[in-house]
Picture: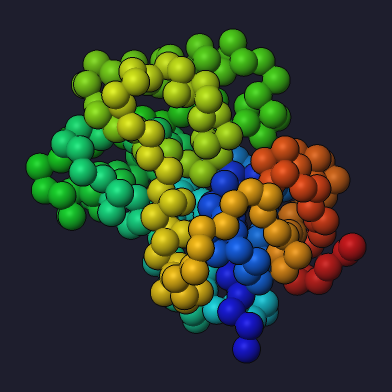
Length: 267
Ligand code: DGL
């Protein structure tokens, strides 16, 4: 049986994880679900986030998956147990993967308000690296702006300066993308951080952890990635999603509109 991975996120964010995986492992059979009818997740309450996770994983159960990749930190921080309980296959956690990439003593986490409030990054990092100082900062403006393609860079920069301020005051040595949308804004965030502050993308460690199911790659694959065995599904506006994701993926994907409720494909 082909090894097939299931990725899910509220929108385009999880594509940053998908791309890291395809860059490392070459052509892999994947199903990506962008639940863009409900983006953003990160300002919803815990109960709703857990219900969404359950609905997504129930849809995944019909897709013959070998593993689920949590390509969304918000559900990872608040509903990993739900996904693990219902998936019936191994579940790969971004937050656990991130903890393995950390060696600094003072860490900043940029995340959605829900992820930051959960404290899950602090818990995971401190369970592996006791004594680490972790500051989690919720960034409510980022996901809507990134989903819109950052139409106003100055406005994004102003929000970023506000969110980064407590991290810089605490003299963090590294900043983690605690939301999978944020790598889309990496150039702007990099400009606002001192040179010696490391930016950490947990998806790099997660792609490595997938060697467990995909095997270690014989060579590191480069851009452009192949989407030949990847099926991308969304819950709203398939064309808009294809447009938005093209620059990031380097190729225009075919995007299917699906309904999580009746589990059928419309296109
Ligand atoms: N990209 C997701 C995350 O990593 C969800 C962001 C959102 O929808 O608020 O948290």
